[in-house]
Image (tube, rainbow, N blue to C red; front, side):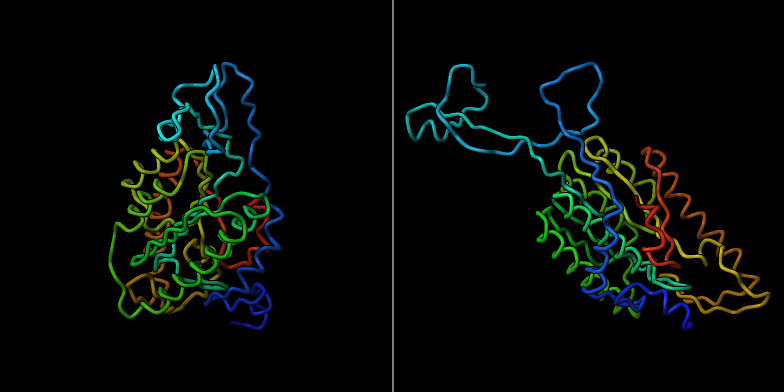
Length: 312
């Protein structure tokens, strides 16, 4: 890596490994993300469907039953124990859970210019997470790889952020250490989509962060079910060599590790490889279109600080 590129690396980052310091430093980027919560107007009714996909109701307290209370809210256990009718009171949940599906498959351990795509995915996940903390939302995540499905249930503020940082660093390091014995599980992202349904409560905002290489049509069913009760957004982490935007010499021979494959790309073989990469990415874009989700693209060749307009 040239001195010029080294000067572009994000704070505390070497482009390959992950540290707690660089994920904490992503907090400085979170100010660009607007609060997506919408205040509920429960007292108003009308003919239009609500834009809020159903916040949950959180238990508040038990009190004596009063005339007019909904009999379905009677707490029968307390009533039986005391001999006096009691009813449960609930309040609307004000914190919106933010759930991150972070794809750390081996295909993201690719970087032709500045950062591994996996490192950029972690930076983006941390930025979105810091924004959730800033806006007072609960934060949860599912970090998925060929060998690991780390489920982090939504937790409030700093607790949610700490568990995410720890999880990203742990899974990332395991992936870096497994390249000599890569496991094969072609359904690991499909299984992650199924698990996502258990983590994401109604009303959650779900962000998918991926390179799109392992999503297939099988993932549509669980994601469709998820979208009935949650909002979904998606980010595709790209690399210029995989996008065909990297300036290349007339003749070259690049050693490339693409998942389990060790390749040497030449001028003659590069175009066929590139066509395959772009076709797989397009499958993910088409999948998102079926969900009426417009993916945003984040380039691993540039620091996230230079792409903040995209995540605004």
